Length: 367
Ligand SMILES: [Ca+2]
Ligand SMILES: [Ca+2]
Image 1 (tube, rainbow, N blue to C red):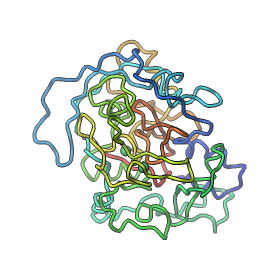
Image 2 (cartoon, rainbow, N blue to C red):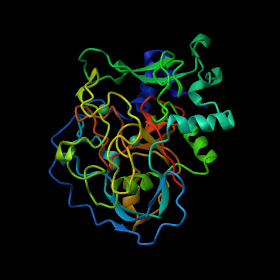
Image 3 (cartoon, helix red, strand yellow):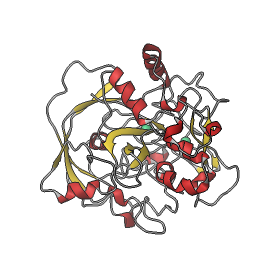
Image 4 (tube, rainbow, N blue to C red):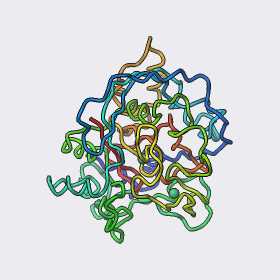
């Protein structure tokens, strides 16, 4: 198992390789444009399945009926997540294409620290961030630099150029799910916060133990849209309907000063904002959420190029793009902002190297 963030310890020349893993959430040069009043008419109707939910409902889960919908994000020239220098940021979330998913149960909230702690207590599971990387996976890295740890967001404390994410992300020895910002931090009193610093395999291990699985990207997006079609956000077309924040994102001056106008600087306990139409909390913002699909920037184009509706798409056979093994993440996080990248918008995509964790990435399960 490789450990991408240890690459942060090796000479700068090697850092290009890790760029995609870190910058998956925050692409340099990606800047905001005004929010359009309504979504693109290219979205087709969402046709929600009519069958009743099977009984009984599993604890903490809601029924997502499934159906056919249009997946993806709208034309970048009219969208906040429009391109910066190249003008094609978020191009991986286009073209729009028709997808059908079967109904499924989904966790109401992100998996919390107390839930993850029960799994660890029951199984003795050790997350990837808690394991010392193996020397054979990192030839050329000094033995003393091979330390267990993970990636931590660190506000620079002064206004900075947004060109280099390494100014606000660092590899922190001893950072893991029990110590999300490093050894000096802990999760005491944060039982109801989403677990973070979990790599993809850690999320899969939890899901198996719980008798569940990770959602596919299509399932996540169908659920996030709440039965509506072509809205900009999981709750509608307005970012702050009636002046109310609907998700935990970032306000202030990115990345150095989060003013927490939405009530929270950094992570929030789950369920602090209104649920979407399917009863899902934090389906946008708070922690990014791992999906089961491999990531390919051209997957939507591949699906759109096939005849008919893509039925229960599972993602590409293999990851393509940066050269790293990346899985899809959805929903954005407490670090998303219209000053930099607005991936809290429904229909957008994120991604992460499978063995890489960070203090803004968590997950929820389906079954
Ligand atoms: Ca916030
Ligand atoms: Ca979330």
